[in-house]
Length: 160
Image (cartoon, rainbow, N blue to C red; front, side, top):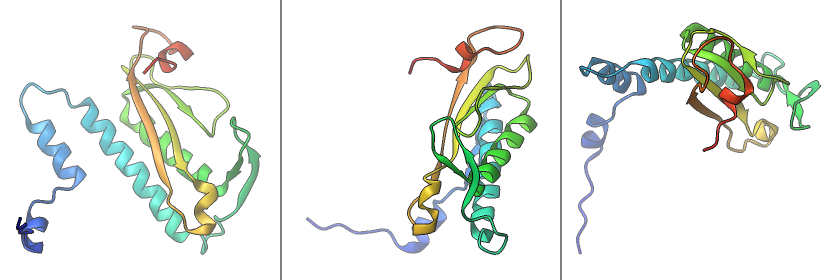
């Protein structure tokens, strides 16, 4: 069996950025663009977070923030930066009615007429940053179950 791998030029020419994909997704007729908008905002939040991680040593962002989260874990300074980035990005989207974050004690209510909720750990593995181990962001977007008014915990706490 002989396998011919594509040249690097072929591989690079097939690459598509997240922004390029989202723009092509929006351009398709008959598709709602809500998810494209939300994913673009998540992309923005992760870029802000990645930039903060790169500058962390220079801006004294390494180490603990002196607080404990709802899981009983020590919150790192970078956790707070990432949480703010995600929260602000979701507020700007105007599509989120409620946020649940590992870094916050309770849900944060936003736009009463928005159709979605989001749950996230904005900087999973932050305790590994000093050891240079993999880190990332985890999120889940759901349609709210209530149809109007202020979002409830039931809107966020859905099975699945």
